[in-house]
Amino acid sequence: MRIRRVAPRWACLAFFVLGLYVLLISLDVMPYAPLTRKRGIFDSPHHWQISAFGIAFMAAGMHLAFPRAPRGWRLIFGLPIAGGLFAPLLWLVFASPLPPVDRVLFGIPLALGLAGVALGIYQGITGRPFDPQSLDPLEAARILRTHGRHEQAEAVLRRASFEEPGRRDEFQRAIDVMKRRQE
Image 1: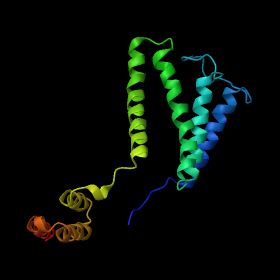
Image 2 (image 1 turned 180 degrees about the horizontal axis):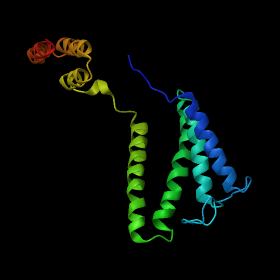
Image 3 (image 1 turned 30 degrees about the vertical axis):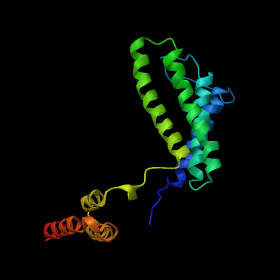
Image 4 (image 1 turned 90 degrees about the vertical axis):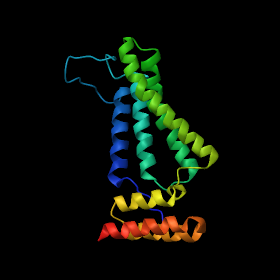
């Protein structure tokens, strides 16, 4: 049985409201009053980069609101999330008036994020997401024992001994070692 964890229901509302707030400020619908005199890259929040972050947060809220949505919906909400987060980062790395050190610092999470998106796209195309059932039975039993699930670890090894009769002795030794450690 696979357990699919979902985010708490309040998280979708928090993301959506925060995104809507950022979007309304960037579109100058709500007034903006800075709290300090310090300025960053932008003098005011009225830039497309800020609007993109707001859209990304709103789409993330919708994505969290429907965790078991059909694949098409996840794609519809996922594209604005990816675009809204990566487009401003790409602008910061390649077109902003930042020194080279800051560009490298912004480029590292951008590269990691793009690699994660590429991995997600690859898994979506091939249809082969990571499956814990594809682990070696000994490794799966070790992980279960680490988390205190000794009965499940033993069940995994017993099932594997029937599925792979050539390794039955190896699995039985692992069961015996596990029982000795429990005592």
